[in-house]
Amino acid sequence: MTAGLLTWMLLAQAAADPSALVDSAVKAAGGKEKLLTSFRIKERLALSADLEAKGTERVSVLQPPGHWYVGKKNRVTEEKEPAVMLTWAWTLRALLDPASKLESLPPAGDLVGVRIRGSIEPPMDVWFDGKERRLSAIDWRKDRHVFSEWKELDGLRYPSRVVGHKPDGKVWYHTRIVELTRLEDLPPDLKK
Image (tube, rainbow, N blue to C red; front, side, top):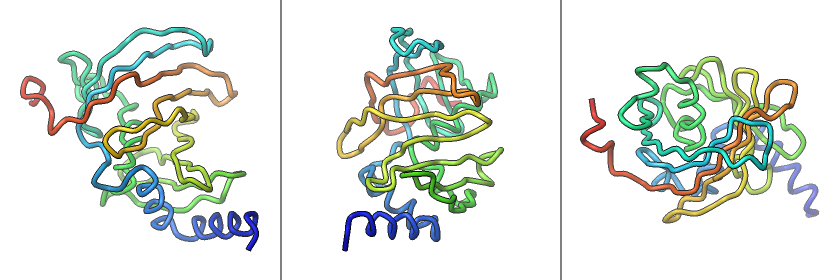
C-alpha cells in the first residue's frame, strides 16, 4: 500500500467517524489520563500582527470551561470571556464532554476536523494534522487560531504557540506558553 493511499484512507475514515478522529487525537496528545483539567500557564502574549513582537508575560490559572483566573479575577464569571472555550478545546477535553455533539468535517487539504456543537456556541471547528493527529487549528467566531511548537509535560504533548487570524487572514495576536504546570485542582484562594 502506498503512503498516499494510506493517507487517503485515514482521511476518509476520519471524515466518516468523528469518534475515531477524537480517539486518535487524544492518543496523539498522550491519552485521556494525560489531558489537562486544572493548570497554570505562563505565556508571552502579543496583541500585534508583528510575529516578532515580544509581548507581555501573563500568568493564568485555568479549569476550563468554567474558570480562567488572571490574578484573583475569574475572566469567565466576571468578564464573560469566551476565549476560555478555545482553551477548553486546546486541552481536547471539550471533545470528550458528554454535552458535546460532534460531527465530522470534510478534509481540508492535509487537515481533518470535527465540529463541536451543544457544549460550545456558536459551533467550533477543531482541525488536526491528517497523519499525526496533532491539533493544528481551531476556527471559531470567524477567527482562525493556528497551533504549533509542540512540547511535552509528563507524557502530555501540547502545542505551545498560537497565532490568531482575523477572517481576512491578518494576524491579530500570538502567544507562546513558556511554562505549563499541572494542578490537582484550583488553588484554595481562587475557589468560589
